[in-house]
Image (cartoon, rainbow, N blue to C red):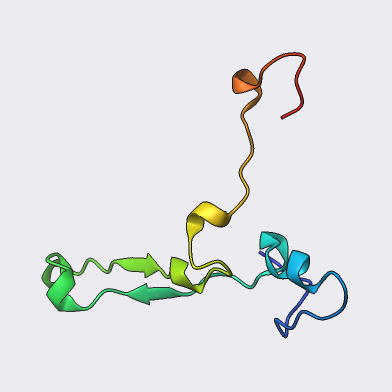
Amino acid sequence: MATSNPLNVFKGPDSLREYFNPDEQPPLPLVELPEKLNPFRRDGVRIYAKLLTALPAQSVKALPGEIPPKCRLSGRDN
């Protein structure tokens, strides 16, 4: 995922719009779960979690989604 804003600084009249644009964000950090939270660590399994709180609105629900073509209503703007 390439970002066109490597310094993660947003300025100008469209700064808020750009801040909330997922294409302008750096990749979300991955953090390995500690052994206490990973019962499979002794078997060599490493589990990583994506820190969604690093999103601009602190919630994955704020990310825009696409409506699959088969779910779109015909004759209406979605």
